[in-house]
Length: 400
Image 1 (cartoon, helix red, strand yellow):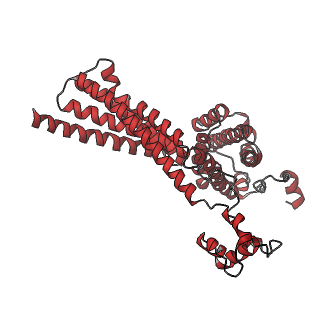
Image 2: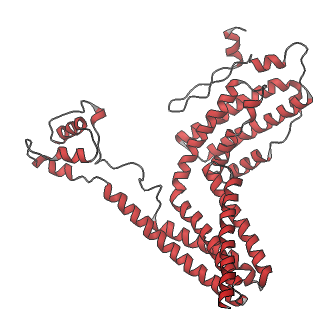
């Protein structure tokens, strides 16, 4: 096939100024298509079902990226639209292989449908985190019907989505950390408290009172602790920020014995860069002779250097509220009048479900397996509660 014919089948889309270059389109006459369409070769029913599923998923994923792009602007919007375009090329590949069999469509997988629902109604970092996992679990690498270019595309897509998700994770990092730790601590500590008290043989009313006291004390302690922790961390970061004193002091410095050089050396500059910066500050250089040496620590940063830390009040309130929401779960059976072993079993089940949920959320946002993270949270939480229950039994036997 001539180069002209190839270009007619796959014209290169124009690249607008300021937009990322689109992913390269694979040639139409690929080895995979040639093998399938070889003389006398017909796709099996299994192949057709698999290709239809791929086609449905590619369409759904392209729709997800377009939906996400609707709530974005600038560079992020261009990147998401480029991803949708690449998924469209994959869709075209499966359409060519299916031929007339493409008329009977299949629904997208539940994962792709969930992504689409979240993208249309929320458009949050959770969607990008799920999309990152979906791209990383692409079956194309083991499927001979997929082209090498498509396999490479999926690998690159995972990294692109990882980069987009990282921006959202950074914005969530401070408050989200406090929220997750608060909820987890509330669940584990109050379940342990309730089980320890119940195992010691005290009345259910005492167990409920202890659980309420644990909720209030823990929530207040977590809120105060997060406020002090984040406030201290932000103050520590602020203390390391260079001041602009060099701007005012430079004109009065003794050129022969000025200590401005020491300032820049202390900030970590090389001697060459520091001497260049001193010459600029002293007015000895009228221009930036070597911009790579023109380090400007006095210029304010455009972003918030505390973004990943969060605000003190935000972290405090998140920690307080989420600890309380977690700590109330173990005492719900006692609030509704249950007693004894039945109340403890219900409390354990409720807390187990909540631990699986919090672990799953952490797994989603971190781009790892939600199930693995959920089971880890469950094992740690129930292990701590079980150990406290045994200690409560021992304490009750000794005191009794």
